[in-house]
Length: 268
Image (cartoon, helix red, strand yellow):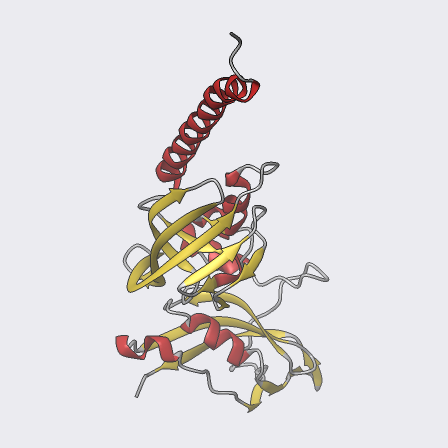
């Protein structure tokens, strides 16, 4: 007697379904092992310096929700603790970190905050999981491509002073000279904002900048000579770029020069 068709179908489909599920589980385990080796125990920066308890992305790395955009060295840095892979998503969990300047090594290094964060990446059958993650998590090598040039030396430790060259003419911009009376005069100074997130650390110190002041008295930060980290450098840069100057003059004519500025921070 022939068995019912329904029973035949069960016997045929069930082994195939089990084989598919086993293959999927094995593939996810391999993906998790690869991601764990690449990311766990290392510090990365989230593109756009996003920070928050839970941040969601699609499979390509597009930000879907959660978190808020911050500033480099203060926000968006994560020490990865674990990776979880499921058929629907990949979750990366870690701890937020500030980047601080080590004057001994002349490099940036992480300071863990104790605040946890979770990054969730949706999965798509047409996109590899590393596509989205690689687009979001930047290593120090990657950061050099998205930050102003003056940060690169503090990522590599190969420090030096950038030559102050006019990007339009290619000519060297002279330094302001007190002896020659060629000095711009600040007529409006915007005080930098001390980030509330780091007041508990009581960071005190100065950020030193090379600033170009053009013929109209408009300043533009050109180089970062002494950083602090903790987001204080960006606070100094944002403030100085809003200052207004009476331009330096030579023979009565306004001229473009650069000046060295020290911006001091004190949480009191």
